[in-house]
Length: 292
View 1 (cartoon, one colour):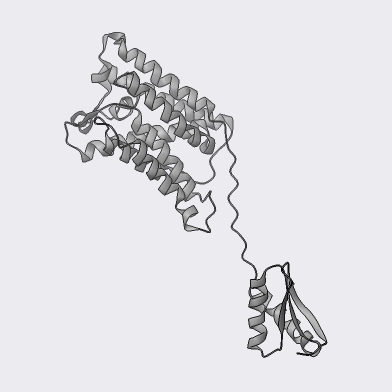
View 2 (cartoon, rainbow, N blue to C red):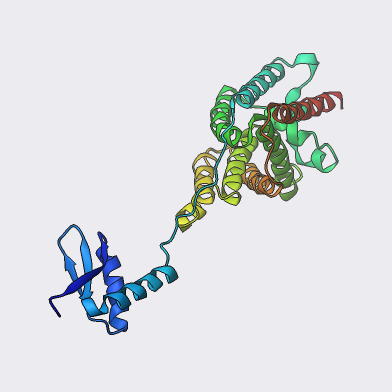
């Protein structure tokens, strides 16, 4: 190597120097790497410096550094109105059912009954979501419903989130009824709770709201959703695992569908209308149930 050497590349990354050294070696350009521990430099004889610099420039143009994929910007919304509505509705119906208001047995009128649903009593897929067998059952669904509803409300807005949850949970109850024996009976908001979990997982995954450059990020929402489903939705001798699973699946499908439909409205008017529709769906279902 000659004494008259020129620096054609310098970097703190020795791997970058080594890669460019391979380029020069393939072109039979004499070179050497000098590393002082902090930076490394690629040196060539003066008469080769112009050619080496040009070849390295072409190499850089053909091999641009990878750019990390940017996450989609998420405009988080206020989930509080939907959470308050959820808690008030299931607590109010728990009180009404507990005292048999209007002289009706709310549990008989509103529970999931496979045979009756197959005969056309569709409202039971909604009314059953608001009934609970006791305080422990009620409190459990309040806690997890608020937790998963919080995430859904922040992503979709209170109104749209809870309308989607009610529809997905009703679909989950319907599917569970059709797949089980006609004598199947159940009550509880847990189907809606896991529909909310599935809704978040499907919306985040299909909407690519997480970084997509690693498989763990790509499938993280799905894996996380199923992990929570397995951890919180499969225990207890009275647990309706089918309703939990199908509620999650219905919610997941609904979340993906919402991403396909395009940008969701975020204004207060649209959210209020969606929330009112969700409340009306529950109210109308109960009115029909108590009059049949």
